[in-house]
Amino acid sequence: MLKVCCNNQLKFRYVLADSWFCSNENMMYIRHECGKHFLMATKSNRKVSLSVEDKEQGHSLSDMQ
Image (cartoon, rainbow, N blue to C red; front, top):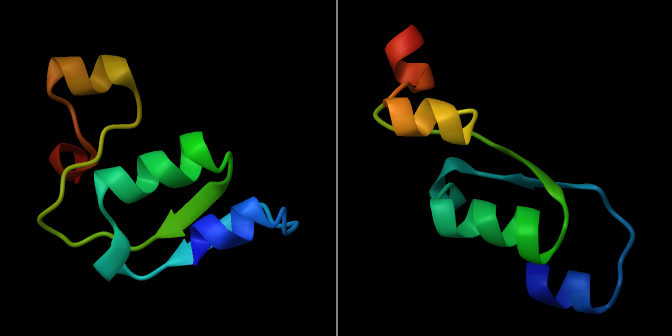
């Protein structure tokens, strides 16, 4: 559905998705292929890094809580 919306050049900035769709592949597709921003809930057992430097150093948001 998202691919069709982007191909039809619908005007929107953000994609709101449930935690069911919160995967690295989906986030990369939304941000890089569609050029949109996203809001997604994440499960408590997931690790999220805010930058490449944080990821390389092994820092994640779950470590900061």
